[in-house]
Length: 547
Ligand SMILES: Cc1ncc(COP(=O)(O)O)c(C=O)c1O
Image 1 (tube, rainbow, N blue to C red):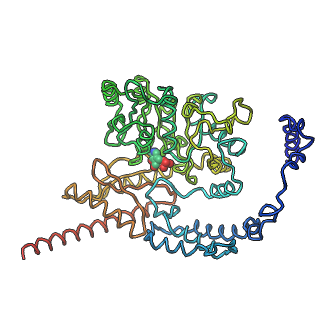
Image 2 (spheres, rainbow, N blue to C red):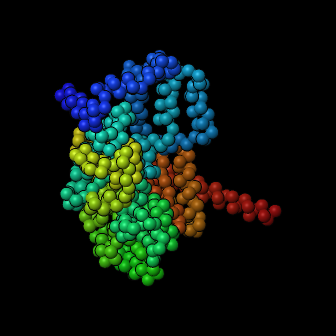
C-alpha cells in the first residue's frame, strides 16, 4: 500500500508539471501565497470541540458496539410476527421526541437517544426476518451484506465513476461477468449498469430501446415524426414499465397490451395479431417488454416464443426480471427463463431474490454499444473525451444517476465469501415452500388457489361455496386487513380478473409447513367471523326494516 501511495505522490508532482504550473510559478507554495490568508473569521480557527467530537472514531466504535448488539438481538428474534402498524401521528410524536431541542450549539452525544432511535427503527416496519412476513418481494438480507453496506456508508464511494469508487466499479465488472454466465451473452459485447431499483432500470432500458429505433429523438424530440412511438407490454406488466413509458412521452394509447393466459403469461399466439393491428393503427412499435416473474403471480412469460415475435416485428425485447431473473442461478428453476439469451436487455433486482439491502438493481444489455444510446450527452466535468484505463470502468454514461450508492458491494462481497450456491439454495427452498403452500391450500375445501406457483408467489382466495363474486372480493380485502391488524402474519392482496385475491410471497427460508398451517387456520378463522358478522348485520337490517 505504501508503495502505491508513494506512486500516487509521484504522479501528483508529474501532473502539476504537465499542467504547466511550474512554468508560471516556481512551486505550489507560490500558488498558495498568491491568495490572501484568512486572518479572521471561521477559517482561521480550529474546529469547535463539538464538531471534532461528532467525527471522533472512538465515538463511532462505541456507538457501533451498542447498535450491533441491538441488531444482533433483532436478527435472533424468530417469533412469528406480522406488522405492528402504528398510527402515523403516534410515531411522529415519538420520533419528534427523540430530536434534540439544541439549535445554537452542537448537542452533546447522547448514546441513549441513538439507542432509542435504533429501537424505534427496528420496532416499527415490516419484520422481514420473521416467518410471519410473507407479503412483499423484499426480504431480510444476508447479514454480511448489511455489514458491507455499513462499510459503504463510512467510506462513501459513489459508484458511477471509477475515480470516485474504485473497488465498487471493479466489483460491478466482476459481478456482471459472474451473472452473465447465467444469462449467456457474448462476454465481449454485453454491458451491465447498476440502478437504484427496477423501476429506474426499466426506464433506462426503454430509453436505450427507443434510441435504437429512433436515434433522432434525443436531439429533435418526436416533433415531425410520422406515427407515434409505441411499446408492447403484458397486461400483467409492473406499473413501473407503463410509468416509464409516460416519462418517455409515450401516452396510454401508445401502450399496446398483450393478452395473458390464466397463469398471467403473455400468449405468444395472440401477440402477433395484436402487434399487426397496432402497426395498422399507425403506431411505431419499438419495444416488447416481457416479464420474468410478474408481480401479481410470479408468472414467467415464454421468452423464446416472444423473442421470435419481437424479431419478426423488429422490436427490442426487454425482459423485466426484477423479481424472477434470480431463478437463473437455480439448476431447478433456470428453465423458466429459457430464451433469455435472445433478449436485448434484462432488469434484475438483487434486493428481491438475491436478498440484498434495497435498492440494488442490475440492468444488463446484450449489446454494450446500445447501452450508451440511453443517454447521449456531453459534460466535460465528468465525461472524458479521450477514454483512458480508468474511465473504461465509469458507468455514468449509461445510467441515469450521477451520484449513486455503491450498491454492488454487498452483493459482490456475499458472492465472493459464500459463492453462488447460497443464492441457489435459498431460491430453491423458497420455491419449494411455495409449492407446499399451494398443495396445502388446494386441499382445503373452503379455499381456492388462483394459479400453480411458478416461483415463490402464490395467490389464492378464501371462498366457501355460495358466495357472490362481489362478496368474495370484499371478503379477501377484509381478511387481508384483519390479518395485518392481528400482527401475527403479514400478507398482501392483488386483484386478479377484477376480484381480489390473497397473495403470499415466500421470502424467508425459515417458513415451514407449521407456519403455513397457522396462516391457513388464521385466514379461515377471520373469514368465518367476517361472514358471520355480515350475516348478522343483514339479519338485523331486515328485522329493522320490518319494524
Ligand atoms: C416485475 C417487477 N418489475 C419492476 C418492479 C419495480 O422494481 P423496484 O421496486 O425495484 O423499483 C417490481 C417491484 O416489485 C416488480 O415486481
